[in-house]
Image (cartoon, rainbow, N blue to C red; front, side):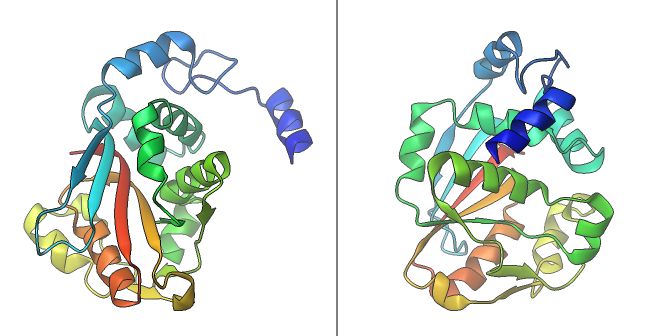
Length: 216
């Protein structure tokens, strides 16, 4: 695997996700600039209507971060996950957040969306974090079974209803009494991660944290 990565990096050298400079997924100059807006905020949930226990987000969904997330999701720039993970793992505070979790689960997308986009943006980030921190990732537990309207196309009032009953749990024994970290790209109303958390809790998950790149 390391040899394959070496070959691919030789043929397709990494470039900075911000400025495009060849050599690294995030050059030093741009890394310093992103660190200035890196919030790394951890919030415990106190809302009884929410099923997750805490949320950790890294940036506000504005400016360059908003532009890069849009490019990552909708403009076929899948390589940006390397940049996001590099800056997400930069702060020591982040490592303390990860320590309590047994399993990482990316928020799934439908088969149709996966076919159209070619990748699940949350899964790419989750897999990289899993490899870096040796926390097991499970992608065959939480499954999206309905191709609903994209949340980004809806207002805040209709998002909750839009995600109702679109997910299923398989291999429930894997999550029983486990602490689960859900990975998503953006936290807006929290409707998506809350619905995922609900079904995970109902199937035996003990504790659920949510980590996103940014919060709107």
